[in-house]
Length: 139
Length: 94
Image (cartoon, rainbow over all chains, first blue to last red; front, side):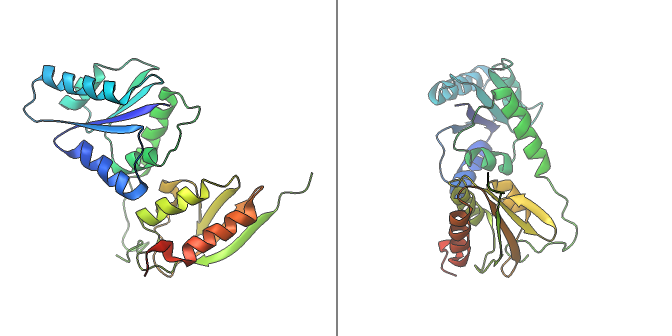
């Protein structure tokens, strides 16, 4: 099964994963690594490598990072191998939630999964026009 | 081969928080156990009830009326299970 690692500065990666787990329950195919703001690049790389090792990524690895151009993404990009390790920048909660809900990534290759989750992430951003829909909690 | 049959029913969201994220997750876990296709329709928008982001897209508040469609080998069972979950307020108690 393709595994997913969320990488961010600060606590964001862990908080995103915890939020998704609170909603949908845990999924061992996902993990998070949060880099300290003052981590040296070598230390950041070591933390990411350690997280990849702990997750196990024999069938492919999708890395979701907090922001394109930021250090977590730059570090993650160093692990990218087309078709085996793919990186998607700009992670949001719907993306993590969608992966969390996935029992199996099925027959999707990591490249397909990366393209698919990118489209899910983009599609989940909506400009709420007035009160077109009150939402589940009425507000 | 028999013609495909679609089971349809109108269901009302009765729990106080509506079809919010955790309720949607319960729904998706439930529908995922069935082989049938399950969709929900509200205000002309029809979504896959096996996709959490699809279900959340409805943003169905308490009192919303949804059209539930089930189609496939176990459609009756799927219909009964989904109706039970919604009527049972997603086990939220209110």
